[in-house]
Image (cartoon, rainbow, N blue to C red; front, side, top):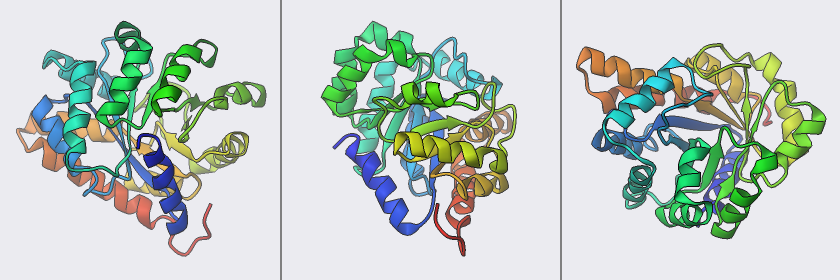
Length: 277
């Protein structure tokens, strides 16, 4: 089924007239068993799509919360192979929620693009975001993912001009991830009024849904972005809940899913009484 799940989910949401809530969590954080419990609970908490980070020792695009999340996962032995195992376990009970892996190039090079693409598709992965792989160098990976039916999802940023955007959206499928603020994750806040014209520009250039991420931590912020984008991505706010639950000796899964539920409700209700995007 692979990337068809992404297309089907966005088609359903367009008919419903609402944006998607996309939850980002780190594979293996704080451990494999808890990470799986969180994954299994996210659709029930309102996640329309799931971004699953695979931990890497040098996550250059990430701010401190996700850096710490990756280190917690690595300390517990999580690997890219372990990440695919989590997806397989999730798929036993859920065949409809799209899962997009997000991470960095080195582990993929080590695995081999063709082998990884096939293994990811077999596990039930629908898409892949590779933060540090520019379009000019992505041809071999794009070929492998196309053959396996997995979407290559690219990033556009506030500094992506029209000429560069044409390059970015080439061979992109599923959706485009618009990074709403300059800098790393979890630091600045996204502003809907500033984001809106960029979302429209990216949507027009790509013909694809546009998901907005970085700088969205609160239900209020998520609701505002949901009025102008096709999807709202929240990551740092969720991995912060893992850290705080560990510090307070609370139930990690319950705390993360509670946060996800409050964010998803804000996204789902954002366009009530408003014309669709």
